[in-house]
Image (cartoon, rainbow, N blue to C red; front, side, top):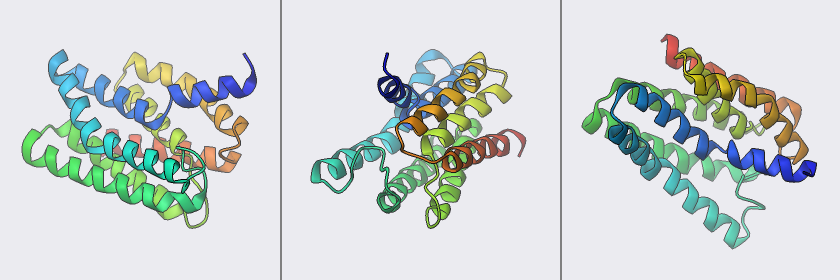
Length: 190
């Protein structure tokens, strides 16, 4: 398989949308029945992934973005606004309706991670692929999930993919990894 093709596949398999689903699904499955875990993932998808997916589709279709990754720093502000709005709405929902501490803590950690990444956008384009993958990997590994350990092993391959596709610099990949792992540590230890 050619380098670029492999890098694209790794970026798809470890996309932030996928990492959010894996993280929520694995955390929910450890605490809930399978049906409740699926419902938890569905709620996250409705509040966050659907609005962001629609935004990405519209921006690319209109020619406002080069690609769905919002690869230019100038494309990131609207991504963060829509993402934050979805995460805040999700937080309100889990606080008022679903009152599950693991969901509340996870949403707060994700919101914090996004806020730090958004603030950094003035100077640097943090790799959200790495941030979300590191968040999922670290949070699940700290919870002693085999999925978390597997994701930790995959992080270098994802970092390589983001560099090969020239979506990020080494500093942006490293910063995304640090921010994501830091959010996971805060989620676990605070």
